[in-house]
Length: 222
Image (tube, rainbow, N blue to C red; front, side):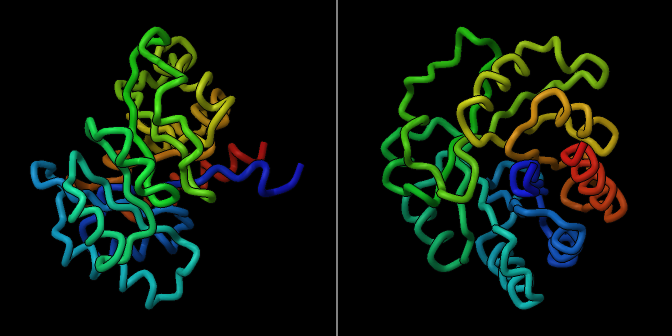
């Protein structure tokens, strides 16, 4: 099997400091996420986000994609993030209208949190062919991960169904200790981690980031 067929992308999210963004890129993360929602404890201003983007680019990490996580952001902010801040993608984490995704086709993807298969509408506009060509179609937030019982959660049943059809980022409760089990169970396009690699909100633990990426690579290569 080709390497690109087994590669599981790693998104490290909730970055608030340039040094942590650089450490995440050095650890091998494929995507770096910054939260642009003021009520979130990991919120960064557009100016701080731009500084992190610039630091990553200046360090030569040209293939790492920068992601702005938003929640019901107005269009002017999405435009500013993509044009002036310099992020590659915006993650829509609220109840945005489907037209937003189509208007930002190729530069935006939707975060969903269905808790049952009944809630999952595969004919919804989010599943139209408007996702980034080299990025995820969806982020599935399956919070409440039970470390020892991954396969029995309703959220993972939904995840399996989505992953068969789309490139999906899986998030929710991931840590260096359980991410390998999730990859073996689901084989997603990618995994997304925030507090599972932190010392505290917005302050990353560099050793945990390295361990997380290493365990993803090991599990993906099995």
